[in-house]
Amino acid sequence: MTGAVTAVALIPARAGSKRIPDKNIGSLHGHPLIAYTICAARQAGVFDAVVVSTDSERYAAIAQHYGADVPGLRPITMSGDISPDIEWVRYTLQMLTDRGEPHDIFSLLRPTSPCRKPQTIQRAMAQFAAQVGVDSLRAVEKCEQHPGKMWIVSGDRMQPLLPMADGQVPFHSSQYAALPEVYVQNASLEIAWSRVALEHGSIAGEILTPFLTQGDEGFDVNRPRDWRLLEMALERGEASLPEIDRLPFFG
Image (cartoon, rainbow, N blue to C red; front, side, top):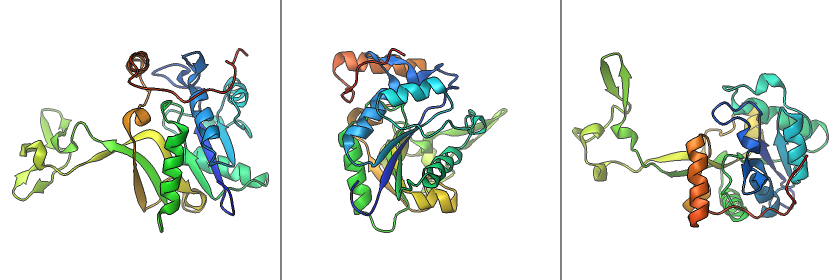
């Protein structure tokens, strides 16, 4: 992004994944998974900096090979399975500010969404820039399983997740066609004003605008099954990856 407003891409890549060990650097079509997000961010041409936040020296070396900046390793206290994103986001934004590189906008791009293209990021940034009065933008897609049909089970009893009704008919007893459209967030991207994180301790704020992903843009790799499905989709031409403009990493 050019002009008075600056934007930074923040790519989280902690080394402690349990469901797929080292998934962020797992090999996908000859390159580590994270390479596709780094290259898409760089090629989008809307960021003044592309930064990877990691707790691993090896991950840092891989990120730098593909053109990302790693201003320092993330503290281990911010790298646990349940560590909230706001901790490392604020830490990284403040680190950049302290070294004289403040940014007005940040975009959270997760490596587990490798099918996100430069054009996806461009489209999202243009939508965010056109909004007035919003705190953030978040990628969403239409739910395949409606939460109105979901239940919370406690022992031998259960209650509807959404104890709501359209007129006199509860959601759980309504036809799908009668239910309101519901969208679920995916890992493709988030964009927010940095002040929302630094001043209010949130990566989303209170006023959000939806970014509707298309096709494979929101495909998220979190389990071994997801990885296999992605590889099959790539082989069949049902999904595609951003172009990698660097030689493979062999460090």
